[in-house]
Length: 68
Image (spheres, rainbow, N blue to C red):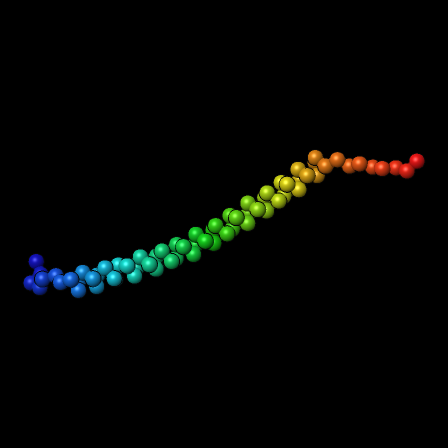
């Protein structure tokens, strides 16, 4: 056992130390998550656009008008 009693300041100092480590980890994870989210959103939009164009070409009716 340590001869000195644990004070409120000691506890606060240790909690600030831990909070600082957690904040840096959260910041790193947040930036990675945002990047992945943007990439996924772009892929989904491009896929929907490509499938929509393909379906539009397949279902489009071509009407030809001739003058008699």
